Length: 517
Ligand code: ME8
Image (cartoon, rainbow, N blue to C red):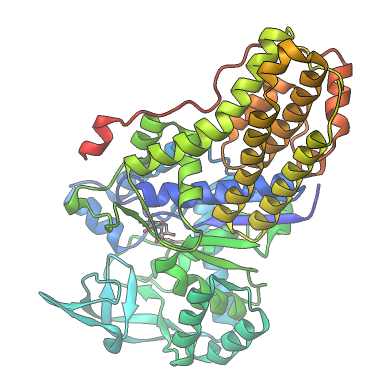
């Protein structure tokens, strides 16, 4: 086993079914987890649902449901989404689990032992939609009163609560950001956080008494923890904290992958809680952008909240995964629509790569009875092609290692395009009659290239790329194996035979039903 790599998504509020934003985050995290596994890391990938808080209470009440049952039911949709989208998580945390309560109380007790918790009276603004407290100065004027900086309604709350001495951590946090320039990414988020912390930190209200749906504060009847205190603790509770389990080797986390709207909680509150509890800080928080439908923010009232399951059944899981990671420059907002998905998938996945693999492999199946031809008469163009693909795959690896996902896929496409140009120039279908020896060498170079390209793109499109590799009998799928050019000769010498391929990445048609929404 290699060095541990612990990646987490945010845990989602199960106050409704998952939407495409949840799917986007899960897909990105899954691709990174698969990529790091290929690179030999001992990966732990965690996701889950954030089941406490006033938003859950109010939603369940509106629906006339028991909040516990409602949370449990909706959480199942999030799990099902992961199954549908090929999200290979290792742990799915639900914050209503007794072990999670226990972990949150253990963290609380450590913060109390540091003298960082005290009882006082809270009076201020709260947004239930964001589950966040805001300073008066941060609010903006809306048509019907004050709104949070995120544009959500706020209400005045006044109650006795526990406070966390966040103010004490202003300087330690600024020092930490300065010493760890990669802690918050991308840079735009980092600058926002630094400006916010430099502006001064007020102590944070960390318990509520006006409802009881949450983790009870130890030794303080009537108080439940502020939902973000317990929610953030999921990253530890999922490893067994406070027990010294073997899974604790994954702490500190390498990457908390979250959306841009919740960077403050992860890059300010969470490290402050951990400093107080004397626990190591995560290595990186990456705030990805928002996914917009045709450039507009999704909202139930606009009727453009598309169910990721519907998108997956309309276009295919691989196609959805590829589109989202390719289309959106990681870290920025992105837009999706059925036309954009169909256009992108047909051009790149179906035509450029799928067709390359399908044409080459079915030609071998049909004309050579599935046997991989031995060397044949080589030409410098063959080695040049293989080298171009090696370089493209290496560039993709470097980009993925740096979370530049769409740039990585772009680099990969350069390898795919090189193959298509090579086919056009070498015209193996013509060589069949005129120069079979030369055709053998061309097919050999193409099979080598297709195998490397399939391994490289596997984290993005595990199903289709996996099928191509299965067909080639290529079992080893990690980066160490990718440019092992002994593979082809061994495989050809072993007498291996390809089966008849079916297209791994079919062309898409515009579905009417999805666009109607
Ligand atoms: O914030 N595009 O849960 P959540 C991309 N429970 N990402 C989006 C998005 C969109 N349109 N909408 C939401 C919570 N997200 C808390 C997290 S973590 C300890 C607690 C992202 O269900 C959002 O930024 O509102 C967040 O990372 C994730 O989806 C869950 O959002």
